[in-house]
Image 1 (cartoon, rainbow, N blue to C red):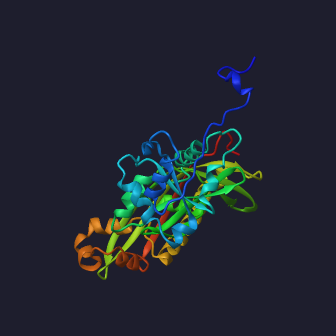
Image 2 (tube, one colour):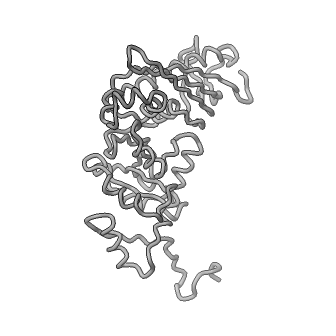
Image 3 (tube, helix red, strand yellow):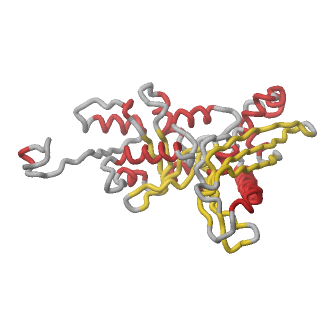
Length: 326
């Protein structure tokens, strides 16, 4: 006897869980109209879960014309995802592990779980549009790559307005989340054991808190970012007791994280991209300066951000060492 629900005329043939249809158009709306011609039922974009854009298109042309159609359509959920892919975007539609039959659910699950585990900020479509419309912050989007039958989350794609100009890897993404006060944390770092550099301890953060302070020096803004990170000991090699070095481990981890934040800020200043929102902070705290110096031009702020001093201060508290204190 065949499995329950299987059609008798199919001879045991397994039904495909999805049907992938593709079409070509001069614009997104033109492509949607062409797609509708191939379907009997009316397209309902309220079911749209993810939009994938090729990296080259995002870098060379930008995504203004692509996202314009979706932004004007009232059916589109603001909680849908938009992602940038390395290589052909259509390849992600066929990438799914053997245990996951529907590629779209696999992709959205990858993003949702990464957010829940503190490995990626919640930069869904509505968040991207909101940041894109702001005058003092540049947006980011998830950056993905197909590896065999699965999709790897590489980090974040960095935008200057609506054109991709760079990317952040996983460690840079963690530093970005530290600065932007993303509370959930999920990244670990290996720290050499003080007095025993051949062995190391894996410290994994589980909670973050950040505060930005702005001062005006010589008529120009400067920023200080204070990050507080709570972490646990995940693993240790060697026989030296954790209790003997736990305070020094916190200080060493804080120095490593501060160095990562400084390098990230320097990188984004080189790209003239304020993805942290320092410009929005300045616009809210000193609107007169913003109006007189920056005006309504995001270009002017991005140029000034590249030269604005930003100082980082990191404190790490190691709360637990697990079931073992040795």
